[in-house]
Structure formats: structure tokens, C-alpha cells
Length: 86
Image 1 (cartoon, rainbow, N blue to C red):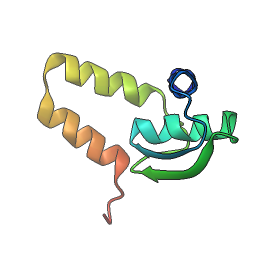
Image 2: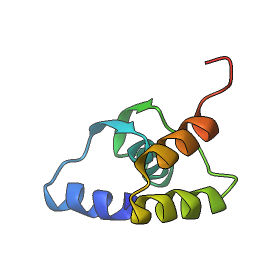
Image 3: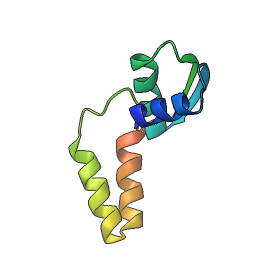
């Protein structure tokens, strides 16, 4: 997705961007900025991560979403994303 964004920006002749990425968009923005630093003037990231260490969690979230188990999905996300203190 970062490369798709890069090619879209190039196609639009946009050469200097301020990127704002939230959630997965934050991960995409980080990759875009690291792969094409000449393009990125500023980078703003919100509610994101640099990497996912537990890739199985995405499978679990997808399974819950496909089953329509919204409450279980939200609880699972909150348990994994937020600390107990938060």
C-alpha cells in the first residue's frame, strides 16, 4: 500500500508531502517515509505501531469480524491494543 501511495503521488506530480497516518495508515506512512524520504516533508502518526510482533492476532480479529462477533472483536482489540492501566 505504501508503494501504491508513492506511485499515486508521483502520477499526480506531488513531490513534497506531509503525511498523516492513523492505525494501519500510520504503518503505511512509516514505510513510505522510510522508502522514499525525499518525498516526505513531515510525518504524523496516530494510534499506530511500527510493527506487529504477533501476526496471529490479525487472523483472530478477522475471524471474529467474519463471524459478526462485534463485542468479542472489540474486547479482543482493546485487550491487545490498550494497557490495563489505560
